[in-house]
Amino acid sequence: MVYKADVLVIGGGGAGLRAAIAAYERAHNSNKNIKIIIAVKGRLGACGTTALAYSDRMAFHVTLPTTCPRINDNWKYHAKDIYEIGGFVSDYDLAEILAKNSAEAYYYLERLGVPFVKENDIPSQFVTDGSIYARACFTGPDTAVQIEKALVRKISEIKEIEVLENVMVSDLIVVDNKIFGAVGFIDEHEIIILAKSVILATGGAGEIYGNNVYPIGMTGDGYAMALRAGAELVNMEFIQIGLASPKTKIACSGSIMRCIPRFVNDKGEEFLINYGITFNDIFEKGSTWPISAEHKTWNIDVAVFREIMRGNRVFLDFGQNPSGFNFEYLRDDLKKKYYDEIKELTSCRLTPIDRLQEINPQTIKWFSERGIDLKKDLLEIKPSIQHFQGGVKIRQKAQTNVAGLYACGECAGGQHGANRPGGNSLLDTQVFGKVAGENAFEFSLSVDLDEDVGLLKARDIFERYKDFISQSGINLEKAKEKLRYVMDLYASVIRYPDGLQEALGLINELKAKQIKPIEYTGILEFENMLLISEAIVKSCILRKESRGPHLMFERSDDLLPKPRNEKYNFYHVCKLDNKKNEIEVNRIEPIKPQDLEAI
Image (cartoon, rainbow, N blue to C red):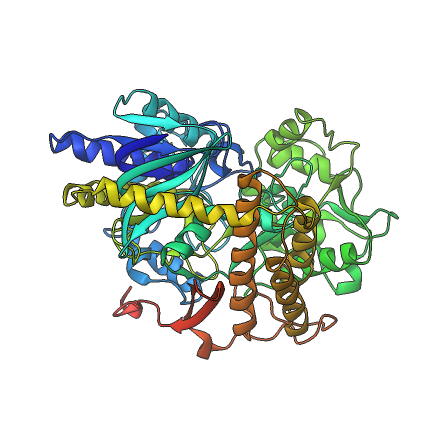
């Protein structure tokens, strides 16, 4: 089946939906006719990260006129935070675009009906990890879900946008470095979508890892398609990892840590004391949730990781205090933060559940609705992959180095560095989603698509897929299990040269294997997973320092990771050598600010 569009958006999360709406609105305001197709891997509004993500109090990071410091151009402080917290390995001009357009993104969502919390008609904002000022707006644990719902409602009103559901887009159609559309499958039936421009908004690649908070289907398809099309990936070693509940996939950040729960293994043993971790560290973990080499609370993630690698399970216990804990032992500045957070003043804050009830009763209710009673149930946690900081390398118009190909949201890279302010990922979907949509539409106006050329190239791609069919080979699920095991073990919390080489060896071994007969989509997903795993591991190997979530140890049993080294203030850029089917990694300099100190 052949479809035709001016703009094809691949992905139906926050970034993809915003891109499609922006393309339509720019065309409508220009009195131009346009056909937009959104291709979604599952059902619109019920798949992908934006539609299904929850956290303690999910943030949308934004600089408003009421945001401190309340001065003209206060967005510049936001841009500076993005760049500095990112470890100077992002493009500063992209950070400026994010910050400068954040207020507009917020007000647009508000007009669509996203119910952001307000006090006295002023948006409520709080401080998140990686930010200096309180910029995080929210609706509750479901901020992302509320954004997705609002965008889906808007999409349903626009007849020029066609949604194709349950589509596995497998490859881009590219001729002479120019986009012609994409190919894929609906229920294993071949489809071709001819398009003048394409926007990749497929999110991250969480399923490469066993421990992740992603919904199913996040196998790095956009990253892999971009590589095969000739585009570049950047910053793939920087993947945010944090303690999360595997049962509910909620990030255990914020008040979940600030109530000081007890960390125990399945033998009932408290083990944090063995690592010199204090009660103050646990409290601070609430606002430094993702692993970061720049904050000492990384040792909590390492302690939990090592306990799990010993074969133990790890839980949070809200019914009892950690041994020796007394609320009055907290530092005065942390107690003040606690008091400022109180929602329901109670007469008792003796145990973690009492304190959680006082500062965030909504979280207790959220878990209860999902069958977990924090008053009596232990909550299992694991260090889990949460967000890819890197992705398809873009520039100011969200464009890639392939003509007519754009990327936005978590699929894009360059706008964030090693770290990012908490809540900036949701902001990113809206700002660069809009940028991508508008510029993809503008590009489509300049294109006279040769459909015959596109169809011929599409048929060549489908012919290539026939090489995947084999009468023998390894079991797909077992192969995925092997890959996830080595990525969890060697390319997540603790990274060290020998382990990374071990992971690379297994990836190459799996690349050489045939898969037992199975549908094309399963094989293609696994091909994507292997390709992106290779990009991640090779980028990790070359960054011989610790920065952000990339903790590089000399050996697996070392107590301390290697220090940050400013000589590594550069990008690792991945390209695919199609002839060798190997990832090549090179260094380039990010775009720097002209005068950061002037802010």
